[in-house]
Length: 353
Image 1 (cartoon, one colour):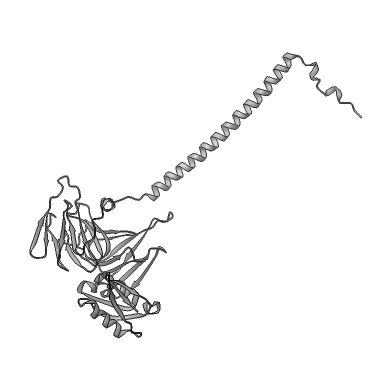
Image 2 (image 1 turned 90 degrees about the vertical axis):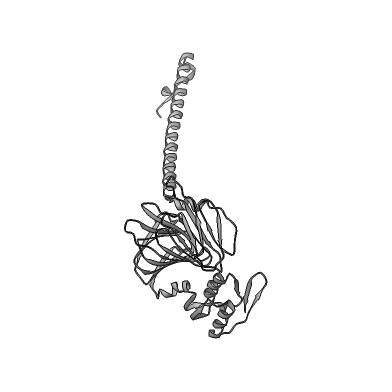
């Protein structure tokens, strides 16, 4: 066996000075290694933090869409309480209650004079700094109203709806904001597009006639085009696709499901969606619960159907809603394959059994 003992280091033979030097070398080596390790760790942490920061900024910018002036105004609006009358809020925050059921409101070309019906006229001061001055028309359940805007465009508001609009439009575009349902007859202007903004969608037109229904308690948004052409911009919270665009032709119904974020189109008889303006509801194979929901808004009555099978039964026909609710219910009852009973109870509720 080979003796390797001669290659082993005898620490007893090393001087104190050599031991000190060796200790210093070991210490320096460990210190250098730790410093290098810290630098690598810091560099990796900084890089990771930079990536997270850049990603966060990117997501923030993507998720923060441009907010138009009218949307910014809507976001700052305060609840002014409920009323059973049509209410017009002017530039000085003055409330004008309108007692007639279907009063026509007309704005002058400069937006300073507002005529209500044929008897009343109101003046309002507009900003001298050319800043948009917004007015608000609130139509409670059980009422309807119509307004002629400063550009001549006509809007019919259905029950439980709200329209925010500038007293006079800016030089480059015409924007209004809708909650609920309205029929628009837009004055044509090639230089100024007309945009109806609402939650989940925008509609852009030059001049046309269409209906929009976007109630907060409905599962879908309905847009029906009678004449002209409209481009619909659907807002989407999805990161991959923030908006979807759809151009529709006359006699087309575009339906946007809010939960599924799905868009469907179909060809329809448009008069079904415009007849309420003349006090007529037209139904074609509609469930009774759908009909009662519309009547509930129109007459401002809470209608409850206690039978699920009855609520899903289909109904087709014309209803003259210029008549009282009892008369309308009798007509539906006569047409139903399963007759029902109903009664009005306290707190404005109607129960169907």
